[in-house]
Length: 409
Figure: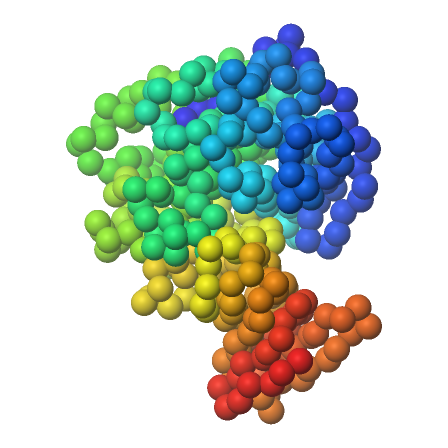
């Protein structure tokens, strides 16, 4: 769905100054400073979620069921707003914010993404706002009429939640698609309109070229039944946005577990389900993913849902459908109090345990790893075999699991 921009009359809230960045993020910040009288639980506010700011409350009202707010602060000190209705879980809100941060995290040495300051700043100039709405996109939610990019509760999976573990396509993960639409429309920019309101016209030119080639080559928008939809997208100038979202979804593994087609993604609209298929079937789309703007792994720290127990795998395992997606995670935090363990994937994972006893599982024998305890209490486990498990930083983990033995920490 195409992002709707705010009118210039929309009032913006004043923002806190940036607090700096770490090695895995841009100069974006989330500042969890809840108001004492917000009425929200501390378990919510500690996640950087607060009550709706007064300057936005007249539009995003309690009558419309909005009750929580978070933001990503751009380098110019302005906010990209995220407003949530009352049925969204806190973890869904955090995940939506994390995906937005992921898209705006610099990719060192890339052609268009080594510095995403201009994209983030442009989004705030264009009043980018993400609306996290109750229910599904069935026309019944009056908040759909508000300006902003809608993303619905029933299409936000959280890592470790049953929808994610089962890869339940009745609740398919639309988060990457819809948030990308907002970044594309208000940050990267879209051509063929009355004016170009984005920050990356050269990148958009490449996106458009790949989209035209894909449509003409029957690689995307596949099927007679979709011709009417393509005409609608053409009329609203949304072809390039929808095409790029289809590529991204397959690139991050969201369609790998879909059983209705062995080779196609995005409900069969796109020629490829996996990265290898993108590379082989849609070379221009593959070039868009090749160190241009998008990271090869997911840069955010995924909060594994508190309902999860057992082994959470960061390594592709075809018997576990969710691993088509989780194979691209790098950092995870176990939440809740159920025993849950993590299988590493070689992305130099950072793994944080929960209140239960947790185990991190490695590929090889214990003698093939070094184990170092640092002064801050974290444990660094380094694989001495190249191109396997990498260097993993563990916090709050009780046991290391190797193929020959377990070691208690």
